[in-house]
Length: 158
Image (cartoon, rainbow, N blue to C red; front, side, top):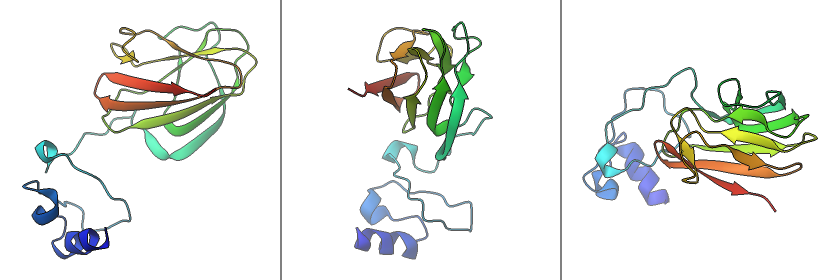
């Protein structure tokens, strides 16, 4: 790993020896400690960020799930780690942001009832069908991760 990092910084992000034919483009002269693995077919591309982008390194605590449920009015889970503390009735809702391959979102339900987590409009969770909610019970936690755009997968705690 150290050899890889040295070569990566020596070549300023164009380490073809370790990334095969893939070459990354560095458009920002400021280097950070973040390392991004790039699939060979995606080398040199960047994904556009939107207002619904996931901020993986942030925590949102004290969220309130939308009373009455539903996908259209659900509370957006835009942080990497989200704690819902108010979920008064079963089916109150939250919604995942539009999927981005490689994204992951952690959700904790500390409310008084089971809540529904919806995918973004037209997307699905665990291949359950477009716009179908995923239930996160009282005191449960879930990890949502995306491998391909349009599809979230969920792991529910015991």
